[in-house]
Amino acid sequence: MEANIRWVAITAVAPVAWGANYYVTHEFLPADRPLYGAALRALPAGLVLLALRRRRPHGAWWWRSAVLGLLNMSVFFVLVYAASQLLATSVASTVMAVSPLTMMLMAWPLVSERPRPAQLACAVLGLGGVCLMLLTGVRGTSVPGVLASAAAMLVSAFGHVLTKRWNEGADVLASTAWQLTAGGIFLLPVAALVEGPPPVLGAPALLAFGYVSLVATALAFAAWFTGLRHLSAGTVGLIGLLNPVTGVLLGTAVAGEVLTVQQVCGLVLVLAGVVLGRPRREGARTPPEESRRPSRRGSQRGGRLLS
Image (cartoon, rainbow, N blue to C red; front, top):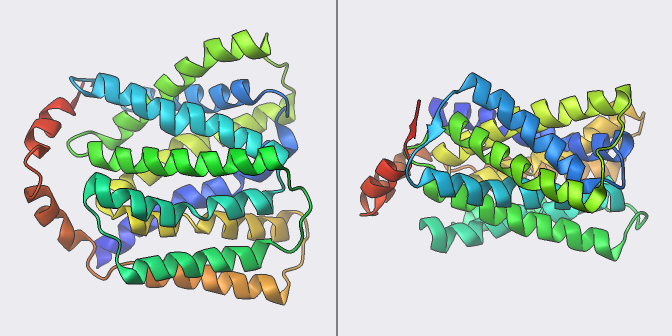
């Protein structure tokens, strides 16, 4: 039980960091440069993690790093950047709150994690809480923004479940570093071709990119992928509901917004969904699942990351 609490706490670092990311992107980063915005988020974070964990991919992890980097970093970051600029934070966060349900359903065929009825109910409870907490008006809604946010949710859910499927036998920090580096390398030439020269950044934008890259990316994804390795995809998805909670509390602390009764009720529902959706003995399921998969031994040999 103590181990479960530790992994939940580590995983929670990610959505808390991401909760501020919509606000920082919308307020301080250039609105017309989503490709450069995504590249400058991914590549510095990857290089920092590579400096901390100097290990190169081995075997299957060369192409796995490329595939996961494209999904989890390149495509996802561009879509999130676009959604952050086109939508109000409340709308974007509400669309992303469907992610726990999506991850549960995708994890069933991909990693043989059948969603429990209690987890599905808690995901619906959490989604209801997010809607109650954030959808207080219709301002800032745009069809392209909603589509970008929905696509980001689908891409991230699939990429995160695929990461869980492949991550056994790999060093989490090193695999995260290579995913971020690959994602940034993919994006730079595309950004130069489509958006021209890099944007000129002032001090506020540089500080914002520092937060987005180091905290909301390097630290957050290392924590998130660590959680995916030790917890079920459904549990990790439910922890992700702390993202909009953080956004609301940040608005209260930074922008001086006042929490309404409706928002407080929504917060309670979200937190109830997160707490009630965590299995009592998460870690006890891992050995049986591994023993049922005959391909794991080969996957671990191909997935090693060597120094």
